[in-house]
Length: 357
Image (tube, one colour):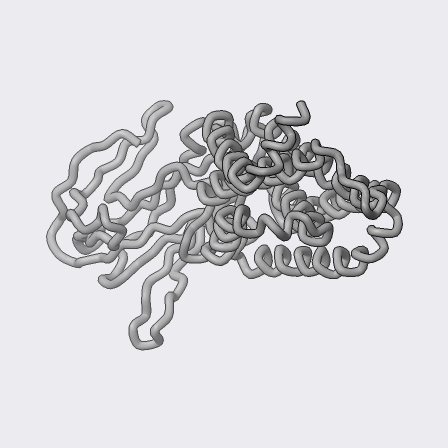
């Protein structure tokens, strides 16, 4: 056993990198829907592993006598910490990116990606209590943001505030354990931990109220602009215009609209089981003279969660004038779920085909 721990200590760098990769693979296998119990069992397991590794390392650092070698199994804790953090960051990337719209959420996704990719580069900082504690608080907060709505069965400012309170309460317990396990070492770092944790609270609140934070646990499963949408029994039928090749590259397709015709915005928004909320279709036309998007009308409707392919609904705009358009699909608190960009070309009736949505 001594030989094993000596080998682990010697190859700690490679083992830590392997732990991050193992966390990512584990997430890819076990993460499916955000409202599945196994998803939250894995997230909570990661949080527990990270807490145990940080607390025990802190205890050993506090109680190691100067000049006396630490136990060989001490080298396990950095590997455990990196495995747990690597799994958490990759899991957050999976779910937050599913819910995000790059146009607004790219700063938060870039932050998550940077933390995930830098997990190995920051290896030497994992030995520092302040660094690990602040990362742990960020992970707690990121988790409560999308787990609390599953309990409250609602989203909005009130639920977000409850998420923050839950994260701070859990972190306060973690800080209490740090103090009990290593009083003197904790006091040396306590003010820095509190200062940086306060920065995390401010940053995530700024992300939320600036509509940068992805609207988890909601996600746009499908969406499109059609010449007609109607519900027939349990299915939705639409008249779709053939999309040009460049639409597959992310460019806005042109829709040909005859005078007096209407356009339909269809969306299927995934929401967890038992969650009921309101979403909004915001129809906007680009005003080239003012160089800004002008809202033409806003239509809201309720959705209920549980359907694998998302809760379906549509809104209509009659006789749209020519120009660049977009339909922003938003939550009740204004966060962007998805966006449908297109342009209107006035002319003859378009050639369409019937599709089942």
